Image 1 (cartoon, rainbow, N blue to C red):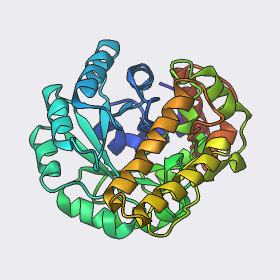
Image 2: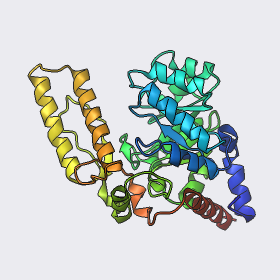
Image 3: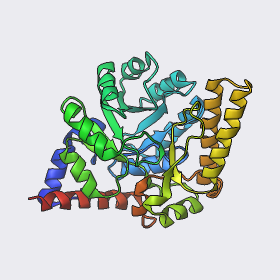
Image 4: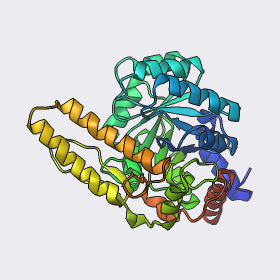
Length: 341
């Protein structure tokens, strides 16, 4: 166990509800990143005492089935599965999680379809949901969520409009007593973890810091882009057409960002011409991102692909094992708490 002394004891105390809920040593969730949060990184995070989460993303039920089985071969510790609520086969994906007795299911992307929460919980899993606003947090608690993640706009990938520090101030005082809350978005050091725990969070979620882990399968070019980038390089995508409510995506600025603007213009034109419906238009844009992300992560095309990264990318300094990243975060958090006396 890292984080010795009084600071370490205080850290364990503040994280206790989170570690109890997750069943791990440190209440540090791995953010679910498509193509990146797969068997290798997820098992490494869980084996290092954190809590890995598989990013199901656009996977078919068969692919998810394999991914969970392969993760189980690599760790005996608990891990979660992140499901996107708008996935057309969400129901079958929930069945796959049940078959494997996945202990924690994380739902991302808006309010879950009716019945989904009951089915997940009926299978014995704990349900973690994303709450980008206080009203939604309260609604999710009423609907039966067991824990919440509040993620600010500093995060990588799909983002909301409000910063982590503001969400934490708005939501934690209202709901932290009733339900375990994890804070995410822009967290790169242990001092920030300590601060959010003192505000009432039971733990945190980090994605960007784990991309340059030795165990992460991302292409060397993708990792190099992270190591070179500063916070200001991770920018949100721009919405071109007000009728196409595109959820902005934070990624490193490159040709892919420019191409995405062009793609929106093309899709909006087809919408105008009556060639496609709104639902289809939005799906095309989602698919664009999925393809662009895969090109960057797997093929290493960091120019025209999408290099999704949070603003904490400037704090990613080197490639190192997951266990060292977690140990450093824990030691920093413990030292920060120790210094408060």
